[in-house]
Image (tube, rainbow, N blue to C red; front, side, top):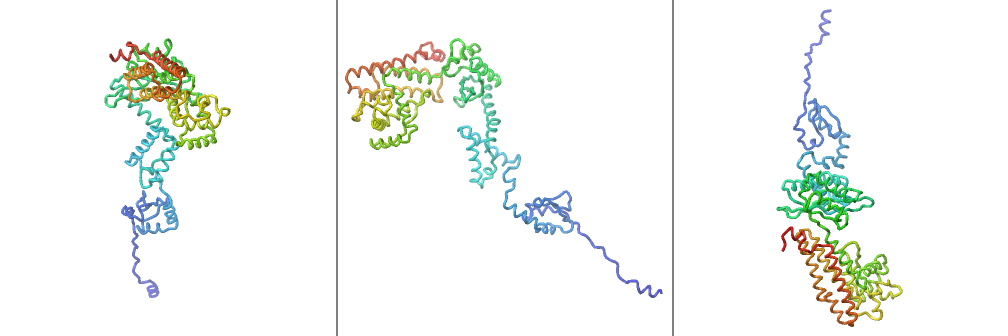
Length: 495
């Protein structure tokens, strides 16, 4: 029994313990170009994470072999293929607080400022910004700019406007600079808006024109306008004592003798200079004085434009008249009566096209031609005249008068103009009109043409032209103070 028991016991060595591997995530794997785009470490050192598949896998036993094995799975390969066809979000957005992020912000603010400065449309700029990202694909900044019309409006309202206002008010308060204010009502449908602008002189930058406020106010009374101005200055902490002048249009609500904005401001701060709109005065002076002529040149300009404004057939026939007189075609310009710079430009273009326009209306005949236009061209029904007719003398005379006023208005509209220049400009204009009246000078072409007419016609024209000069001078002297007591002379010590 014992022998059999001993035979059954196996004579084999004991089994050896199998050593198991305990690998941990190695950060050197992240430097491998095959893994660095999707491999990441995990809280567990024996695990690795795939950012593409959004899973974790075990590297405890196989180490880098497990990483390589995962990269060959069907799911990972499909996601890797799809990612190559799509851009990641980091391509479109710069990292927060990075240098690239600041450059993108500066670019967006600069493009918004460019849009506001040049009066461009938010919608068109939005389209242009999207196009820039497609054109300049190699630019890291252009591809990350996201500047739609809503964002541009927010930047303009909440960034640029407050910063601009801060710069202006800081400069006025720190240096205690005197400044003038100006406002005017502007209608937008049924809504009424008022801008509040300031002008001051900076020793370093020269004359500065700035916008302090732009508010809506339905009440256009002098009391409401005055209160709005004072409230705006108070909110910006600007002293009314530094206001030197008030500017506005020549309406009675601004400069009336008894109850006006100017009178209410002078009660608070005496010796505020009255800065009327002298361009408006010159426009009215020219308009009222030219009404004395027996030929209405302004109506002629309006009637001629209306004849070609909406008629393609008339324009085509007019172009044939240009070919007939061997002249290059120029479009007829429109005159808007309330704009003081449009009449001269429209009349200047009318004279440039006059031969062709005369030919067109003469072809129409008296029955099909407007009565006012026929009054100027009807005496040439049988034959076009090479010399100016009597009616055409009025056109050339009006052109000459308007040129004088136009030159003065453009001088008054210059951005570098200061109040000390106003008296000289207005006085110079009055002197020009007086000299022309005394010399009976009505323009070179007009005086040359008058020599060909009878003494009666010549005398009639001279009487009307002199009346135009007289009324223009009277209007200027009525609405502008040319006396030595003028504040512009007394205040600045002019001789």
